[in-house]
Length: 127
Image 1: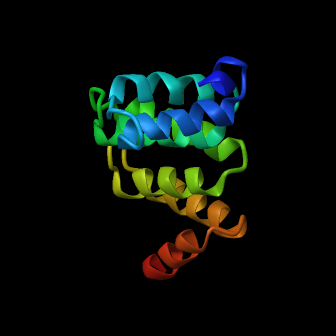
Image 2: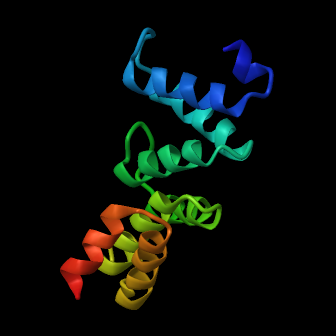
């Protein structure tokens, strides 16, 4: 808690994960959401990714695919290939966003080129 309050965004994300899972503290999605949001705003892209997943799944928040897509796009743009793969899947399937298979494939390729093995496996399945 002190690390997060002191500006350590990794600390905010770790604390958020504890509240999200109820690990050592009482599970509290609202606190987790605030901590992941703080971490994300502070530049912790893994925090943004978890926040995107919460909005995508409607976990403790109202489901919001557009917000999830925007967060995954931010993660992808930062160079985190997991964000590119997840966003690619959303576009490829039209899952919460307007279907754009070509954009999905390009995002899978970007993620694969960046070393994300799951994205490479997805490309093999669709070729």
